[in-house]
Image (cartoon, rainbow, N blue to C red):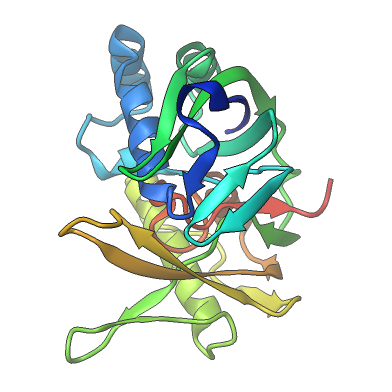
Length: 257
C-alpha cells in the first residue's frame, strides 16, 4: 500500500540546506513515527501478524525526496521549494491506510546534521492507487536499487544492472521477501524476464555520515521491464526492489497508469 506525503518546508526555523545523504535520518524518522502510534501501532502489528522486532517490520520502502526547486552546493541541497513530497510504501495492508494517515498527518520533523538541517511539516497524506496486477510492467526507480555480492575475502561488491546475473539476483531477493512476509515458500511461477531500458546511473550513498558507524552503499537508478509472477511484482512494488528497502533504496514506480 503506497502513500504520498505532501510536506511543507519551514526554512525560518533552521534554514534551507539539507545534507545530500539524508536517507538514514529519514528512515529513522519513519520508524519513530510508526512506533509513536502506541495503541494503534500495536493493533496494526497484531493485525498484520508480526512483532515489534520481527524482520517483517522492514517490509517497507520510501523514495528520494521530490524537491521541485533545489540547488546542490558541495554536500548540501539548498531547497527553494515551499512544498516537497515523499512516497512511502508498505507490504502490509490490513488497517494500513487508516493507521498511516492517522500517525503521519501534521507531523513536524527535521533532517540534518551538526552543519545544517531543515525543518518540515507533513500537510497531507494521500493514498496512491496500485497498478493493475500485471505480469509484465515497465518501471522506473524512485530511489536507487541495491544488489550486492559478498566476495570470498569478505568484501561487498555492488552490482550494476548490466551484470549478467543481476536479474536472477533480483528475483531471488523478491522470493526471499515473499517467504519472510507470508511465512511460506513461494510456489508461483519462478520464470522471469528483466530488461534494462535506459543507461543506469550510479549513486553512492553514505549511511550515518561523519560517525564511527559510517558506511557507503552504491545503488543504481534506471528504467526497466520486468516480467514475473504478479505476486512477486506486488512485493517489488510495495516493499522495494533489491536490498535495504527500509533505508530508502529500491522504490520503483510503474510507468503504466
